[in-house]
Length: 235
Image 1 (cartoon, rainbow, N blue to C red):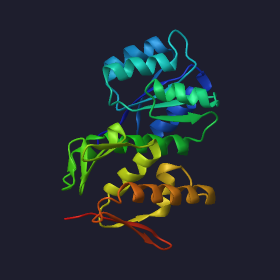
Image 2 (image 1 turned 45 degrees about the vertical axis):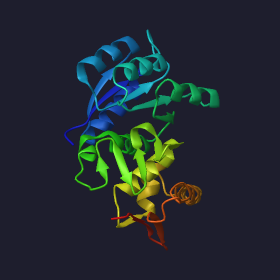
Image 3 (image 1 turned 90 degrees about the vertical axis):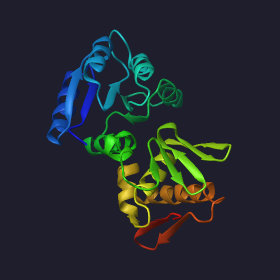
């Protein structure tokens, strides 16, 4: 896709400058706002590809800003940056429309990976893929239909709600049908690092996805020992 426009709303000047410059050095087009009301005005002017929002903001906090953004543009992905760490804070963030949540302090590499992951679900380049399995916002998986933006997997009238990481994993697999997908690539794109703990988490998520798709035996996720996985699709 063309240069990615990011709306970044942050009222800590030092952090804002570092993040903005770091993202711009990676080729992103970053528009910075320092309060929630201004951020909403900028959103309407820019139509950004993705929003990165602090939660504690003057005039309008990040949660209210996210709700307003989602009302006007439900498909725009939102990442929250915050020092809040309680479970109820995470729940409030997701209920307000957040797609991902990054605790302060954070590494720029992790932020960039999370931005790229969310964009992979919503970029025109992905939705416009000439893959025979992709039809607009839905992905046909044999007898299943996968809706990444809605975090849903449909089998007839049965609808399974997926978690954010389950959606990330299944999206990455469907983007690479009938070819090897490296474990390390999955770990870096979904978790931001390839530590032993995250590697075990990946095993758990692969098992879940296999279970979800088990009703259609023509769909297989083969383990390539020491390499990664091969996602087999029906013709």
